[in-house]
Length: 374
Image (tube, rainbow, N blue to C red; front, side, top):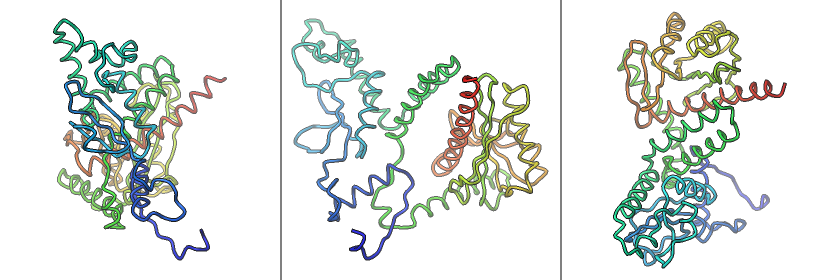
């Protein structure tokens, strides 16, 4: 294969999901000699909700209009494991049917995964109006989740995960974390594969537009950030003050720069206080201002209190500081102004915030594991 190749080109994309979708699309179109998979368009998985008296939620390989009358179609998704996992998880929250009407309640009804079961409702001598409404309400909720309007479900999972963590039930917390990741996977924004083909520099263009939108937003609210070459984001991770850690992650020209990441082990005794921890980390970062490249912008994962702590130190160095608060995601300025994020600006700021959170928790879990094993 190598000896027969004349040249090699590549297309940069923004995620693993987009990479898989683009690969599948190109294989189907070009039918390369050495690639025997994905040529028949049967690999892609769709989630559909049927248009019936009791709509079913199905994972199907191929969309044939004469097979189903559909309310909604979601996909395609290249990874069947993730799709089936998310449907299994949703089913525990919002039970649904995937079978045709029969005479007896299905097996999943006994497991609480098809409850109320359409078989029970339609074969009952009673009207069972409440059960009928409950079933349709479940379908509406599933549709909202699959339409990426899943904040309520996600928030509930986050609370459950944090409760497990506080109880030191780390295995259970990890399971919930994986559920959240799977939910994020299936609901993340996707770019049409044709856009990558039409514009080989699409990823660079998106990054530039993200930075320009953020720069404009900062300028409107009084920040003098004319250059966002280097953005640093800080986050704190601890468990009731135990093994407190902090992270510094870096975006260079809008892209993650892993070589510039830093871990901090919080030294101050009052590790339960995010404010004290933030102040310590801000001072330690400022002390290294001549050793590490100077940032053009600092983002703190937190509200006005955390922003003021960092700003008190970095305003002297002419480095603007903003915070990012959640529910909903919004940018917090030192003067107390809060701006709700959306579009490409939200995409950029959320990316660096989530990376800072992941990196801080990784070090925190390492330290906690060592402490528990002593």
